[in-house]
Amino acid sequence: MTIDNQCVVDIHTHVYVPSYLQLLRERTQVPRILPPLDPEDESSLERLVILPGEDKDASTANGRPVTLGFSHIGEKLKFMDQHGIDISVISLANPWLDFLPDTQATYDMARNINNEIQFMCDQSPTRLYSFGVLPLNSVKASIDEVQRISTSLKSMRGVIMGTHGCGGKGLDFPELIPLFQTIADNDQFIFLHPHYGIPINKEDDSLQTSGNNKGHALQLALGFPMETTIAVTRLILSGIFDKIPHLKLLLAHSGGTLPFLAGRIDSCVAHDPVIAQSLQHPPSWYLKKLYYDAVIYHDTGIRATVDFADPQHVMFGTDHPFFPPLDTQDTNMKKDKRWLSVDSNLDALDQAGLDKETKNGILGANAIRLLNLQ
Ligand code: 5CU
Ligand code: ZN
Image 1 (cartoon, rainbow, N blue to C red):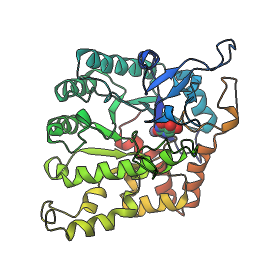
Image 2 (image 1 turned 60 degrees about the horizontal axis):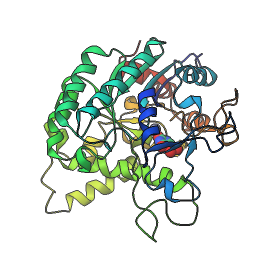
Image 3 (image 1 turned 90 degrees about the vertical axis):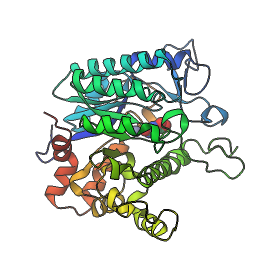
Image 4 (image 1 turned 180 degrees about the horizontal axis):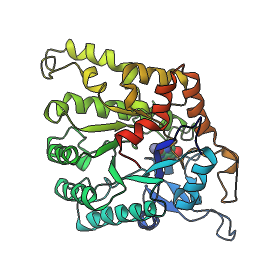
C-alpha cells in the first residue's frame, strides 16, 4: 500500500474519542453535539457544532454529521487503505480543552482522552501513532501530562494545541514557558492547529453571523490560516526560540500564510524601533527551522513551503475526517469513493516539480525520521 514504493504517512488526521464525544453531547453551548435532525430515522446522524458562532448562522447551525469516520478507528484504517496511507499520526480534532475550566475534572478529561487515543493506536500499533492533548488552562497539570505521555503512552510523539493558550492569553503568555521547556526537553512535538479563526465579516465581528449564508468556507479557508500566522508570529516575537531553540513546532496547513509573508514580517520587525533589537535573528530565521504539514491543496503552496522552509521538515497530511466528499457526508453507508481533499494534496505534490527524494520525504520519509515511527 505504497505510492511509487514510498511509505505514505499522514501526520494531520483527527479523531474524537468516546469520552470527548460524551462531553460534547452533554454541553448546551458550542462546542457541542446535537441529536440527529430526524430522531425517527435510524440512519439520521448526530451533528457536530464546533466553530465559534456556527450555531448562529442558518447555513451552519445544524453543524456537520458525525459519521463513524469521526470516532471509529476501524473507519480510519479503512480510509487509510483506500488512499494508500501506510501510517497515521492521529490527534484529537478541534477544539481541544482550552474552553474548559482549570479544574481537576479537566485534568482527568485530558488523561482519559490520551488513554483512549493510546487505546486506539494499540489496535494497530505499527500503523497508528498519535499526538496527545493537554489541559492547557493549568500549566502545572499540562506539564504533568507531558511527562506522563512521554514515559507511559508509547504511541505519542507530541501534543496537539490550539492558539489560545492558557485562559485565552495566547501562546506568548510567559507562564507557558515552563510547559514549552518540558515539551522540548522530552523531545515531543507541538502540532499547532487553528480553531477560532479571525473576524472576517464587516457587519459584526463574528465570522458566522453575516446573514449571507456563507457556510464554513471563509472561516476554514481564511480564518484558520490567519489564526496560525498570527499565533506563530507572536510566539516568535516573544523570543521563545532564543530561550528554547530545540522546541519543535509543527504548523498545520503549511503554516497558514507564513512562507509567503515571512519577508514582510522580517521587514516590519526590522523597521520597528520597539522590537527591532529584541531577537537574535530575523523572524524568518526561526520560521525556516519550524516543521510544516503539506495540507495546502495546491502546487504553488507546496512550492512556497518547500522553497521557504527546510524540505526535510515538510510532511503529508489529509485532515481526515474533515472535508469528506459532499455526496457521501450524510451517511455511514460504505463508500469507496476517493476523497477530493486527499487527492488535491497528492496532486499538488505531483505537480510541484519536486525531485523524487524531496517528494518521497514529504510523503512519508520525513515523518518516519522526525517522529521516529516504525
Ligand atoms: O470542517 C471543519 O470544520 C474543520 C475543522 O473544524 N477542523 C479542521 O481541522 N478542518 C476542518
Ligand atoms: Zn485539522
